[in-house]
Length: 281
Image (cartoon, rainbow, N blue to C red; front, top):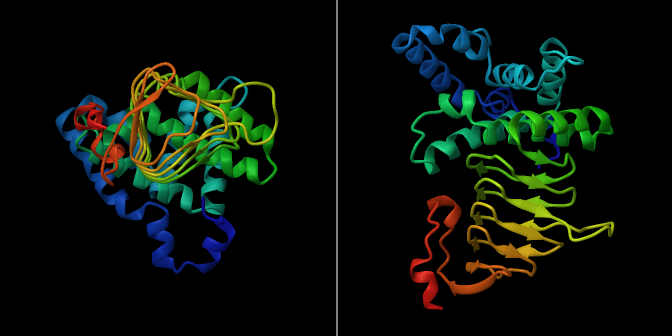
């Protein structure tokens, strides 16, 4: 993540608008109006989620607030908390806009921005984490824990607020993803449902995986311990990974073992989960 204070201090007005997701906002609002024209019953949903707001950050904050509210903290309390974090760190909204575009590029079932913004719990869970991480880093642990807990309950995705997530991420389906406290997920990573980035015991310190750029993690894979998954690696569905994985290597099985290497392509971008030529060794 960027140092948000330094980022905010260095930006021009134009850069602030871009950083707050401004370039995606017009397209998202247009898609919302088109959805209402096609399906008038969606008016209330689109109005509350998009058209009642004047920026991407404002719309995202309110969407998450309505998703995460409970009997103790309603949306009216949560929305200002989320907006405050996005104002302190414009990169939160900027990265959220990048994640939207990423889903459209990688998910063949999604051809717009509106669908993941409104409905995809993997996307929404990542954005809730980005705010929780900001709060955690600024000493607001209980507020961060609240967002973590509610995101786990609502989206089925449990990410410790201290975990470090990069840009242009896709959590496809999202259900059952667990990411531990000292885990790192670098830029351009894709993972499917039921993935665990976990520890192996009660030891303290760095104890969770470090997933490098462009890694694709298949459904149900468990990656355990303070190990590195190298850039461009591919983790087969259902694999149990207990040892470091070299860059551009495919591993499968329980315990996971290498089945081949590729060139410098990034499987997270193509979402190619087949072994194919990887098996040639």
